[in-house]
Length: 474
Image (cartoon, rainbow, N blue to C red; front, side, top):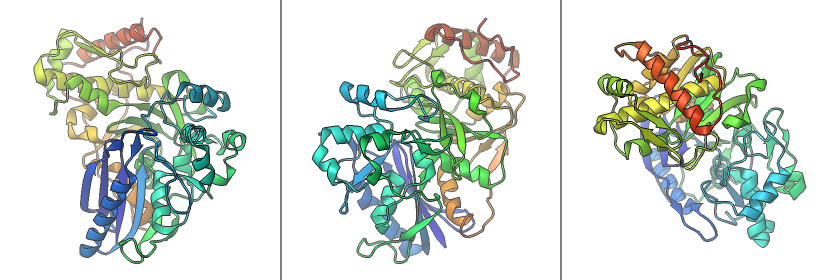
């Protein structure tokens, strides 16, 4: 019996169908387009529903589909009454009015209790709810629940409203992910009635309602945060001392063994909750968009020759190439390239090397010394994981050559938790990229870190990679 997984990314929507043993049977995808306001930029839930329901019905005509689960980025939520959305679901890249931002900052506790530094755009559920309440009090008063997107689709299919720990813990700022207590904003704003019971991501919340055109008897799971679904797949397989680099539009680092004292808001670190509700340290950056900005939208793979040319010429990419600081405070929109990349191949190599160097800092921030797992879109270019391996010689770097760890991990909520099937990982160790000499890479890395520190006027975290001395910025 198959399980269907809806993977809601910022850029694309994907539906994957997995068999009981975790094998991919079928998949479909489409762009995840947002609509302009008024009242704000928002997700086109109607179009998504038409596509989702039609795709599931099509799958069911060819395969026995037993279950459905949705996974989503951490910033998609819907305010609903008994009939459906009462206001459009806010796209997290929507600007927050200055007066709302000021009010919001006064309500939220400091990091790490809030889970993440406050974003300048509408990236937090609590921030979205306040914007909705202040913008349209009458509509807000009609609402019964505020549901993260995975739980929205579970509610839409079954009529049952729930929350679960991974979406609440993913920078919602509604809860403190260190102990899962309230941050106080729900009580301060009178939102208690909008909070649904909290269940496990794997909980079957019900079967699909009649009249939706969906497979009869389809069981619907509560759903999960996308990067946490990716993490869950490796946790379920027995990995313990590891850090995950989940790649795509976002470059996401997660490490279950990072100590609480390592959390540093200055570098954009986060703390979320895994599928069992335990705190997990994380780091965020818009790696995919920075890659596109550096390459000018070019696609391809990286050659050792192009990398050696870049390193030899000392060409550097300095952050940030998008309107988001990530781990580099004050860098948003200030990115620049110093030196000559060397044509199309050089730009692709520069973007790959830049993201590998950023990932190296992610691992330092998380104090990662165990295994490193690379998953997601960047695995399409073997050079990325091989560069991470070259930059972290003391750690084993593993890569999921199949990609799609988010969907596979979400599927394990059914196949592993409910069906008792073992988790089969498609990961393999990566050898360091065979450049002409690691000394050149080490010197380049040291020079790049010095340049970045000067660029953001702030020392970077000390290195724990073993590739070069810890005084990288001296």
